[in-house]
Image (tube, rainbow, N blue to C red):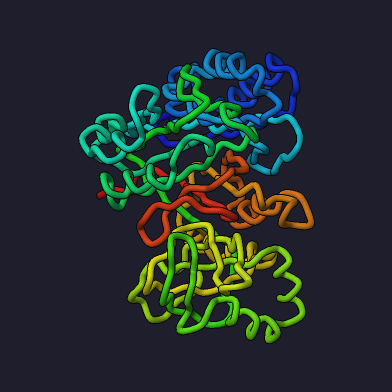
Length: 406
């Protein structure tokens, strides 16, 4: 048992830092006793990942040092967040800290920081040798966990660098959401705390990782081919302005779907342009952020290229549940995961569902007892079709299991 992989999750809503750290350490110690005999935390925690609500930001140094002293992890990673997700609950608008402590025998965990105070992002991200040297990932690589500051990290470009230099390796994570201004977030790896840039860990060796990205939207109408575009503007869809299509199509929606349009209209951009049959999981979802009534063009939250296929989507709580359940089905046919991480959009939670614990209740009903920690992100990171993207409105999950025999 001592040489087997296991994860332990812990959550506290104690508002005083020392009391919060004691609570977390005690929860970990009690649960660890089920797996270990006569071992101290520094002997077994290979990786600790903590997510801390913004209420603790003024004392974040005390929190980080307290977690280090209380857990003695080999590597520790974390960030501040608008809300956090524990094993059984989503905690919004309330002080809370959640974490997972992982024992992963035979795995290699290597931390990195992507922060460029003395150089520029362009140099770091386009110089393959410099980028790989900075990340310093192990050869038997399985996963990157990446946390970023939304005000300073050009995450789309960062992910392009990961896709180019580590093709096929999934990247999961999210953008810190604990602040509404630059330099207001805190991100840390071990005892290094930053307020801009990005950081994370690479994981290799004796660990199997499954990544699930649930986008929580459903397609409506049929796919369309983009004839003309400019940056994030769609100017022409199959010979007509997008707005002209929408004016014809919206009246054909059901009353329920027309009501859902009040939550926003989304565009799915096909990630496989040559694929004829398209469905859920074949699109990268982006929000419609503007409409030009004169030209009929629409603007979306990403760049568009001529010739790509798009399809309009709607978002609602029922679709979010159905999509997440569908994405989790393959996990139920495998041995239960040792642990998991959840990166969920801050537009979900009670902003999407009419009840608390919307996503975590779905996960635990399908994978009961999974030790998990997560947070509400200002952008979620995960792969679609083998390529890593920055998302919105999604739930991005990583499941960890011992490596299968080869």
